[in-house]
Amino acid sequence: MMKNRLEKFEMKYGYFFPKEYKEFIYKFGGDSQFGSCRFEYPENIAANILRIPGKMDFRLVPFGDISNGDLYCFYRYGPEIEDYFIGLYLHETGNFVILASNFKSFMYRCMLDDYFASINANEDLSFEDNISASFECLERCEILSKEFGFNLDEIKQYRSELDYHNLMIKKDGKAVQSLCYLGKYYLEKEDYKKGFYYINKAIKTYNNYFAPYYILGKHLLLSGKIDGYTYLKRAIKRSLSLTGYSYWQEDFIDIPEDAHRDVALYLEDMFDYDDLLERKLMRGADPYDMKLRMAIAKEYYKIGKYKHAIEECCNALYCSRGNSIEVLEFALEISKVSGDSYITKIIENDIKNLSRKVY
Image (cartoon, rainbow, N blue to C red; front, top):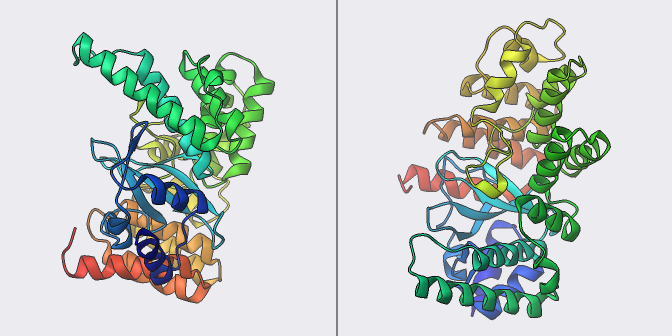
């Protein structure tokens, strides 16, 4: 029955789920909890009622949540089944943090979270309740260890956030936020070889992620190296929502919420711009201006740069403040011309729900 529900979603939207996820959810079902992720019921995913239309990037499909309202999502960046990341959508800000490059490594992260919870008492619980909660967390670790072949003894070395991200990268060399964390850590420790290695690997993994350019650019500038401007100019063109900003301690890498404004301040006195966006920003335009982002999207669309146009529509959506129908309708037009069918139906559904005032 669950298989039919998920396949119904895939056939309707052309947005296919990873095989490992489907096998997992068929076995454990909705409302199962691992790490901080409570997995959603397949029927709710199939009905596409978890998205936040008009606010959420149309490449995101939620599959789980945290009790505070943040959503674990698939982020599809291409048409192939393996063209996805997994991360956390921050409902308070609209940012998306890339945590893993596949479902198996995401479950490894869940095991790390459960193990950490098992060795750290919750101040809000009694001694007896903490003992019980610790036992439950370790029980879930055992389940994931058996289900995915994870080495439970390996994670028992985990004592700090540095250990956490090192273990993640050992399991998943494309875990972007962990790469950024390690890159920043080693740059600050003046181990430049390691720092540059992790930052460059993050850029190669997904070059639309803001954090690696920002981290390296600011580090170089503060070290008195003019090369920092090169990276900040690249940072300003990256996603407004995929910045690496997070209010969760384990993923905190010191990215400000309005990160693009911070970068714009560094660039406003420069004169060597490469394109319309740089020229506007160097003349004082707000990087979070929806009209600016839509104008740039239309410029890209005119010259056939559909991928760039879609990215700018996502940026416009991020700063639309509820005026998102116009953005979605233009994104829909682009997706039909570019052949990006894996987002076309998602956008159409968002427009339909917004038109009905379903939020």
